[in-house]
Amino acid sequence: MIKTTAMILEELKQYASPACKLSRMVKRGEYIPIIKGLYETDASTPGYLLAGSIYGPSYLSFEFALAYYGLIPEAVYVFTSATYDKKKKKQFETSFGTFTYRDVPTEVYPLGVLIVHEGAYSYHIASPEKALCDMLYTRQPVANQKELKSLLFDDMRIDETEFGKLNSDEIIMLGERYRSTNVQKLSRLIRRLK
Image (cartoon, rainbow, N blue to C red):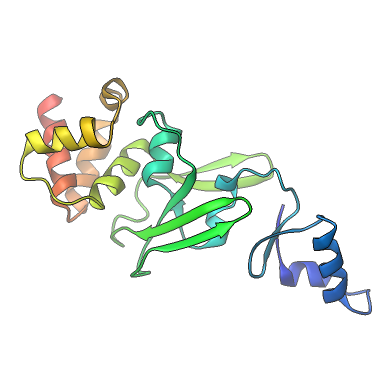
């Protein structure tokens, strides 16, 4: 379970020095530091369950979400998340893994984001369609449909069978809202394939 320093110190307030008690508990492995002011009680907690607590608001997207949905064949070892209005990419190295955060346009940030509950945890993750649009948003603009297909299926290695299962209406809706050449070209490609 994720806890803040303030929560833990409140729980330990009966001790003469709650901060010293916390320090001893960390040394014994009862609390595992994630980042300054944030702890986890279980060292085996998967990193994706912590991503939204480390930096936010954010949701899992980009390479992590594409791998999560089976759209790309590679295993992804970095927990990649989307934010907005942060102006720069952020990275955190923790004992739970590497976490990266980068902006998407504010107006599309809340669209296509799912809340998943897993045990005592919940996390936000982009839909497959949103993750693909977020990923294309971060890439250099392509000149035409041929270059887009090459980007999707050769460079990004998107699985064509899984690509065919994407919700075309959601991609078209997102394509209208992103101010991205790549996402708009994806929307046009999807319209032609419908």
